Amino acid sequence: MRRLARLAINAGTALCVLGLGAAHAAAHGYSMTASSRFAWSVGYVAALTVAAYGVGLPDLPRTRRHALLAALGATATAAAAISVVELFVGDALLPRAVVFGSALVLVPWYVLCARVAGDARSRAEDRDRVILVGDVDEVGLLRAELDRAPERHAVVVAAVTPEEVALDDPPCVPLLDLADAARATVLVLSRRAQSDDDVVLQAARLHERGVRVRTLSLFYEQWLGKLPVGELERVSLLFDVGEVHAPHYAQAKRLFDLCLAAAGAVALVAVTPLVVAANGIANRGPLLYRQPRVGRDGQLFSILKFRTMHCVDPAGDPTAEDDPRVTRFGRVLRRSHLDELPQVLNILRGELSVVGPRPEQPHLVSELSAKLPFYRLRHLVRPGLTGWAQVKYRYAGTDVEALEKLQYEFFYLRRQSLALDVRIVGRTLRSVIGRDGR
Image (cartoon, rainbow, N blue to C red; front, side, top):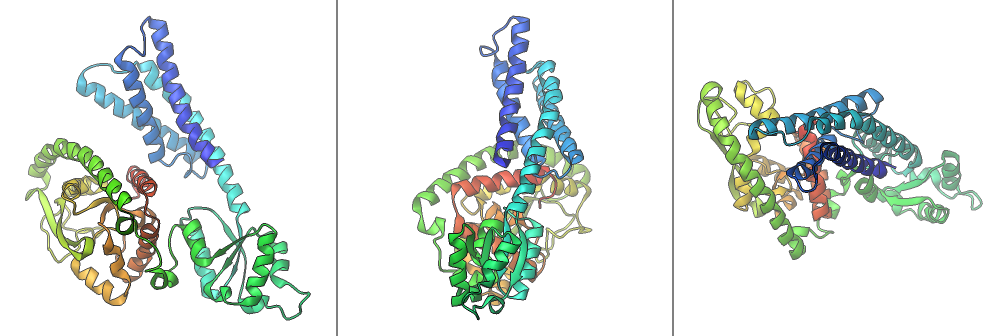
């Protein structure tokens, strides 16, 4: 149902805009498909679709009020965007009846689709009922992870240790009885539970009954989009990395990078004069900021950003929140993420990819490599302008948070594909528009 809701939003947007455009053309005696308004209508459909996704429709709103605000925000953003373009070119690219009529029709439609997605989410939360056979610390951690930002919703309805479901009396099958009582649909086994013959025997019986059985590591991957911290070192060499072991993917990914970087370069050329002018007023100093970062195979390169501080200490952290050195205009650049735009040059030079683990400073890499023997695996691929860890987790300022991000980075390395790359780019867009990204 959630996929249906997403499809309904996109299809409804296209039908509404193109239908209103066709009605306006029929009423005023011109051919819509033979005029430039058809192309602009398609562009407006794309703007509405991107805006709707960016504000979280249909998945994120939890209440009708939030859905209404998101729908109003999406339609207003798209209408404002087309209005700015019309002002820039000095021509009415689309009739007002199409622009504002679409908003009137699509706001309730978006709210309805969000409600359908919300109902589907609630059913999914109830449908995936999990029993975990593992240790106490694994239970608490898993519950916390499912409450945070799961890829698929689930609830832990029961948790036991392997000893608690041992087959002391052959007729007694405690794990099956527990699954029946809890109406469980998924059984998750920790590494210790997988080595217990009693647990495996009962898991096989549950599998025959239709209960899905997952290892803890696989459950983390499928439901949470990460690898559990306890499995990182164990699996660090047990999977192929797309950029290393799949040459065709590596070539396609590089082409993907170049296409997006070329579009970004056009935006960079357009934005740079505005940044230069604003710097002269509220951000005096050099235009660009350079800092050494660790790239693929441990090679150093200079990452490029628009400068956002009065002065920059190369040994300092230019991303620290509430830094007093950030200028007024620098805050605008950071909040809009425009300070990252010069990194398209790093992508064109092959130092960065659009998607990959975020490049770190050399001293941080040295510290983390000393603490985490498997940390250097992330440097087998090009670092990225954005990445799975960036869209799934906040900024990491401590060793504990860096380890948390590494769990998401290992998931990306293990699942590298163009489909995942496109998905991450879309989520980054949603994060930036929703103002919760970094």
